[in-house]
Length: 82
Image (cartoon, rainbow, N blue to C red; front, top):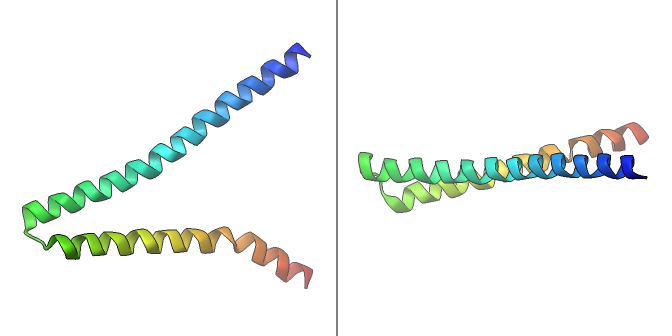
């Protein structure tokens, strides 16, 4: 019983590290987009409202594409079962 417990704890640590990395990469990307958007506003003289509207559209389209792609396996299974 001790060995399976050690393996489960090891797997839990690996899963936690990978989950933390995935969250870091997601929020790191969002921070980078806002940072570069701010640089464009300051250096290029763009309108802040238009820049943040473009960033918002980018985020929503990326979320929509991700949600659509996540349903692809289900659509394939439904097609196969029909």
